[in-house]
Image (cartoon, rainbow, N blue to C red; front, side, top):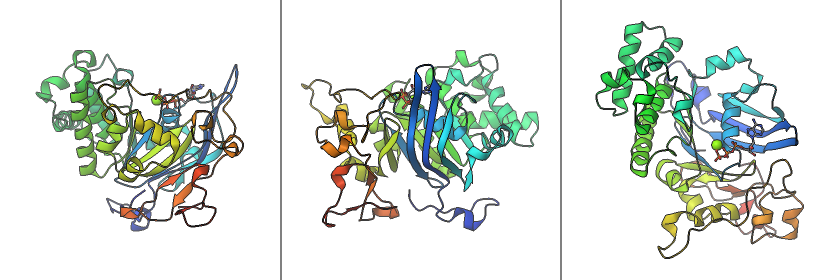
Length: 357
Ligand SMILES: Nc1ncnc2c1ncn2[C@@H]1O[C@H](COP(=O)(O)OP(=O)(O)OP(=O)(O)O)[C@@H](O)[C@H]1O
Ligand SMILES: [Mg+2]
């Protein structure tokens, strides 16, 4: 997405130079089910460079978590298939790795924070010990050094009285503290990439803002790339520099946050923006996008958004639109792209082209 080159540790300069850290290319993913095949991902493209914080947004059921779980290779083995596509991490296709190889990647290079921390924190082990165990599983340190590091991480996450909290069980923590502990655990091995799936949705707005600000600060300090999954464009505006908008298994719009939010080009992004509460007046009713995300068992042909799109033309119902890219390059070298026939530039003057970015 943007230019970011930091040579850290033993990484070669060539590896870091402008190469995306994570590149999802044309990823199709299906779940064969009793009722038929759910085509959850329909050619997803994403790119994230080292140190970048990008948002992945979209309504419920659009495929955000499936994308994240595919990158982590945490989907139930044998219950899904990938007919096409690649997931390149530092240039290597993760889909070709075996489980042992993936275990080395997870935690050490890519960490994930889940929406509900109780599903990933072990309820029977004290929080500090859990973090220390993660540290010990990836680093050659003594138990006492790992314990001290765990308390340091909790302190860094601004958990008051960190030593005492380290000795508590997850159920003894507040929701905000649990999320902070999860972030501490996810960052404990200094991953290159952190995937945060709705990390603050369960928290109240004030705590959410604090936790997100802290997450951002820690990742900026460590130059950790972050893929932040959320349904909240307000969160994206506050935290991310890049955004990818997903709809029904496709990335329909991508680009720098300021650009995409100021002038959305895909009607779906525009409709999502209309639903942000800050954008309408107090006397107005809560706005929603008419209709709903289609079943991915029987997705509509052409552009999957066309049944809900006020601007849809006959072609939208027949042919899947390619991504059209803005011919002007945004600050930082990024480009704004959207998969919508409305951007087709028949006379070559409207500033959008169908080509690789
Ligand atoms: N294990 C599975 N088997 C069958 N279908 C699945 C499976 N996991 C996910 N899906 C389907 O894939 C689609 C995308 O789901 P996903 O969880 O990625 O949505 P999401 O964008 O993360 O939504 P939310 O905002 O609600 O978390 C949905 O239609 C879902 O039903
Ligand atoms: Mg999800």
